[in-house]
Length: 305
Ligand SMILES: Cc1cc2nc3c(=O)[nH]c(=O)nc-3n(C[C@H](O)[C@H](O)[C@H](O)COP(=O)(O)O)c2cc1C
Image 1 (cartoon, rainbow, N blue to C red):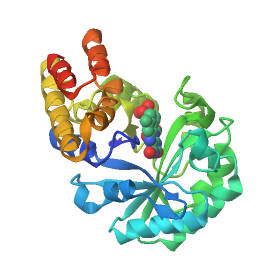
Image 2: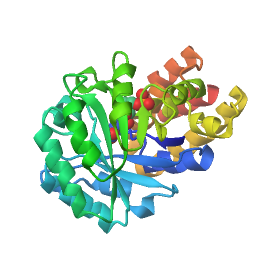
Image 3: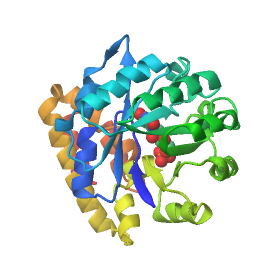
Image 4: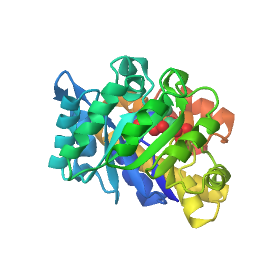
């Protein structure tokens, strides 16, 4: 199975992806957080994140979010101009501000709008498209009316996160609905959601042997060795894991230290990684990291951990 690194806005930007591949690896392709058109413009931070000169990973798939063919056209045009050969379409984002504009999982209850976007894809024979989606926005069977359009579209893959948009990231994943989608989808299918250990990945593989792969999000933020452990068949000792995490953190920290202004900005960027990173680490040490008010204190607590 292929292992894909999920896009996580605010976390898996170019530095994380580049250092992750260098230090851990095991990932077949990295997906960028979504690029959008905002009041008719691209955002500079998105442009920087997908610029070829910012990226060193061997396979990077830029992701777009759009609700109309016109928006898709702008974003696909940008990706082509930057030299990309693949593009992922976000139909999964659950955030109400995004979904309310019929973007991300907010487009799923509107089959005509999904159809219009998918019909646009034939105009970009130079791009191989994929879709990353949820089961629906309001109901877990909304995908059913969309599937004929998805099956007919020129897609290289669908990644399905078996929750509905309204759930955000809460509650159980819906394996039964995933199984129904799996049996009816003609495209290579990728499972995404709550895979935290190599055993979790193996269980999904056993249950759905025709999967093209799995996409790892928070599990890879928590245990950056997860993909290489699955791919290489050996589990890191905690000593090995902590050593590599230490190096990974140091690289990320130094990268942002050189670019962000002042302690507050720097801490606002690096502290959130600890919401996910090493969930089994000493609780007191993690709490101290979250509470650290200065860069010196922060670095001392990270060193201690
Ligand atoms: C903070 C955060 C940011 C995310 N940003 C994106 C995004 O830009 N594009 C996207 O398709 N999914 C995004 N996701 C969803 C993840 O890619 C993934 O589908 C989700 O976390 C479920 O997989 P996991 O349980 O392996 O994390 C985001 C999730 C989180 C928690």
